[in-house]
Image (cartoon, rainbow, N blue to C red; front, top):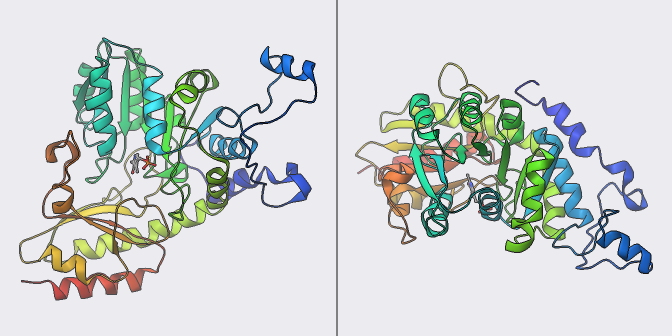
Length: 389
Ligand SMILES: *Cc1c(COP(=O)(O)O)cnc(C)c1O
C-alpha cells in the first residue's frame, strides 16, 4: 500500500456513501434517536441472539454515527472504526481494552498532556506501568519494549513536534508481541496513514482536523475488525463514551472538505514557519516539514507548530497584539490560534511537568488557519514589532 493518500482519491472515499442515502439526499439524515423498535417478537429475538446486526440503542449502533465510522475507516485504510464522544474517550477506551494489572506499556515522550495524565492516574491505579522513551531513539524503544503489552505513539508529538519513523517503531512492537497504537490527529489520514505503516490501531481527536470547524468534540479509532471488536465489545459500551448522531453528522459535513483544508493549512503553515525561521528574534521553529525532506511516513504537514522567541520579545504583549490569531486551546479548525508556553506551564492539572511535554517558557504554539497567508503574516509582524522590549 502506498504511504500517502491522493486528495482526489480521498474525496471519492468520503463521498462514496451518498447513493444509498434516504430520499436521495446528498447529505445523510441525522438519526436523532436513542432506541430503535422491532417489527415483531421474532425480529427482536433474532437480533438479541446476534443472528442479525441492526440498530437497537444508540450507545451501540446508530446509522449516522456508522456513516462517519465507515468514512474514517476508508480514509485510514482500516477494516472498521468506532466513533467516540471525545478524543480522550477514544484514547482511554482503546488503551483500557488491551491492558490489565501488572502490564507495562511503552509511550513516546511528549504525548498529548491529557493522555499523559490518563497514564499517570487511572492506569497507575490499575497497576499498569508506563515507560516513556524518546521515539527517535529506536534502540531505546527496542529495549523498553521487552515484555511490554502496548506501544503508544504520537508522531509528530504535541508541542515540539518530534517525528518518528512510525514504520520502524511499529515493526519493533510487532517483534516484541506488543500492540501498537498511534494518535494521528496532527497529520490526519490525508498526510499519514499509520495502518499502511504497520501500526495496529490509529486514533484521532476528531475535534481537530476531521471536524475542522471547531464546533464538535469527538474521537475515533480505526484498525482491523478483530481489534476494533474488542473495543466495541467492552470499553465502548461500559465506559460509554459514544459519539452522538448530531456530532457524527457535523463530522461527516466537515470531512467532505478535509483534503482541501489540509492542503491549505499545509501551504500557509509552512510559509509562515519559514518566514518566522528567517527572523533574528526567533530562536527555533519546531515544524516537521522545515528540513530538506519530510520525515519518513509523512506525505505532508498540517498547520500546527511551535517556535521559541529569543530574549527581546515580551510574549504577553505579542499575544495581546495579535488580531487574527486568537488566544485559545485546541486547533484544527478554520481559525488561527496562539498558545503561549509560559501559560501552559502554570496549568494546575495533575500530574504535570514541563519535562513531560517538552514545553519551553519562551515557546509559542501557533495553529495556522484558513484566513490567508499574507493576512496572517501581517498580523504576526505587527505583533512582533509592538512587543520588542
Ligand atoms: C485534542 C487532542 C486530543 C484529545 O482530544 P479531545 O477530543 O479533546 O478529547 C488527543 N490527542 C491530541 C494530539 C490532541 O491534540
